[in-house]
Structure formats: C-alpha cells, structure tokens
Image (cartoon, rainbow, N blue to C red):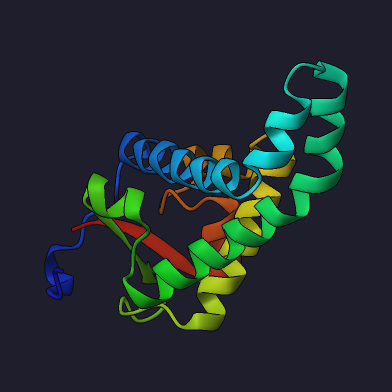
Length: 145
C-alpha cells in the first residue's frame, strides 16, 4: 500500500459506496451460511422469517459487522470491499495506520450510521474531508491507494 503522504487523495463517495456493497454482500453470505438451517426452516412463512430476522439474526449480524470492520481496518487498513475498490482507511491525525481502538470506534459508528436511515453516510457529502459519521467517531479518513 501507498506510504507517501504527499500524494494522498480522498476516496470518492462512489468508490466508498462500491466498497460498502461488496462488504455487505460478503457479510450477508456469511450470515446466511451460518444460519442457513434456521432460514430454510421458515422460508415458506414470511411472517416467521421476518420474526427470525428481528430476533435471532440482528445481534449476530451486528457483532459480525463490528468484528469484520474492526479487524480489517486495523490489520490491513481496508476491508475486502475497500481493497477491491482500491481505497484505504488512515488515521486523520497522523495519516498512518489506524489503531485497533479507532478501528473499533469506526466500526461501531458505522452501525449507527446504518441504523438511522444511513444519515451517517450522507454526512460525508457535506464536509471537506468527506467524513462520514463513522469516520468522525474513529478519527479516520478514507483515501485512494
């Protein structure tokens, strides 16, 4: 990955959205594989499926998302989606690697960004650093590789 901080360029919202879609597809497949027995058992009954999603799958999905985003952003500087989109997450203060604590705060902030009608993502369109709510909570920037 790029270490020259003189050439850092903010990632576009388009590339960030592309990375988001890839990461969400990966996480959805993982959850479906883990819970396939329960999902297939109620797939014929839409009401039972919705109840399963609300009761049994919400917390595991949130936990998986936080673990996935924390680990990948901390260890690699990017999730799989970001790697494909050729973008990475850096510390906004020193433009280097994100600490595990910052990666965790960013991952939790991302959950809140999603929970409240994606308003946390929309914030990125209205500030100079294209910082979403989770970038603000984790004190990070997303840049091109």
